[in-house]
Length: 357
Image (cartoon, rainbow, N blue to C red; front, side, top):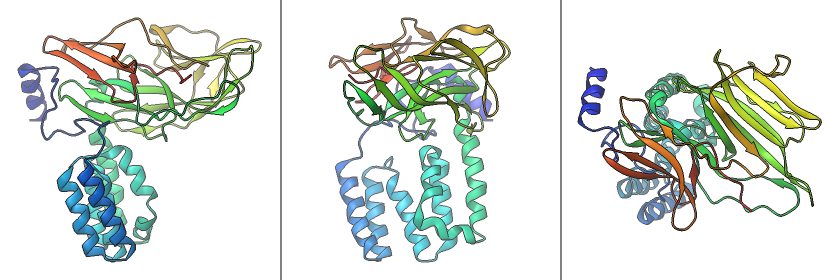
């Protein structure tokens, strides 16, 4: 029945440039919450601090009524129920939030201090089961989505020299053409720097970084960079594999055998490695890449690609990096049904973004 419904949807209009109502995901993940929702949530927090749980929940529900896609009040409701030792109600509220917005809220739920007492309760089993189900549901259709890197907050501007801490505020997002909706794919504290989807669309390799080294008269170097692969269907993250030393650039690609390859340029030369389960295997030679050029991250970030990305024939569209009139990087989707700009107020790129100057 699900497949039939999807086929009907595709036959009606695909891609959808206006979000399909009621589908999983967000209509605009970059939109700031409605001011009335923020105010009501703040009022609820003040009541929460006074341990007035019922009154706090009234405010949190008012925040949700003002902006249903503002998810924070739902976590606050779950916490208030647990604080009242309403274990089953709190677990159910948290499970419902995970089902509707798995990334990033599953991590927020796992780390919420006021939900910690659930771990010693039988009701915690409900949360474990809900998280597994929510992950699988969230991953459905991502193999047919357009993945891109977007800033969720303004990037911290970098000084002209020194060992600089990168804080680009970037995560991976997916735009699902059949639904016209977005899903956030990573929750890496805004440290995603570049991505390379596998040719079959089922996995994505990405680089996460912490530091940039700028010296007078020298090209910038990347430091404390790691690479990770995410299985999209199950939302299963592999380990973060470190790339040792200061590097001039790193390129991500996929081999014909389906392995992620990592090409690293550092002194004294260039090394091509295959990403294993927990380490880089750099003894296998160059290896052939699948699907053309990979994604290259340098000390300047990821520069916009000149090549336009094309979708599968079932839902034809093209996507290309562009800039808004104010100069902010964005992605333009073109299809027979019209045009759409992706990326929000802080910028987006198909494979990554340049570092701020």
